[in-house]
Length: 175
Image (cartoon, rainbow, N blue to C red; front, top):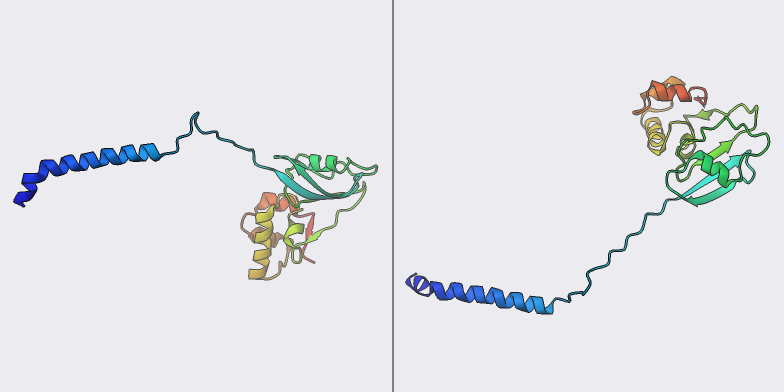
């Protein structure tokens, strides 16, 4: 250990010089770009595909690019309401989601009820207040616990309370 104390200054000086020379070497080899880097950003696409059926001028499948679209935008994409459409049957301010099916009924049509014991996720999503997550929970609940005996049993599904049930009670059945 005596040799370490004797050559300590030389070792420290050598290490410092090695670091400096290495830094200069790396600096020389670095491909610096003059003028800085250019950052290019693009806004995300909000392509939404949906199906409009019923009393509209041009029923069909549509894809439009836009964020925060509403049912009104879907109706407009389909050419607007046809004569005889029940314009008050839909909440035109409701958000439009990818994969939605928008049915515009005729005046005087009695809406069909959705059987919550047999409906697939896509059909459950068409109910007011039911998005993809709640629709999947309904199907999962049905698979885990069996069929619903009464429409009120829908409130046993996590996330469906009395307010959501009240919106749905006239639109659903268990038959």
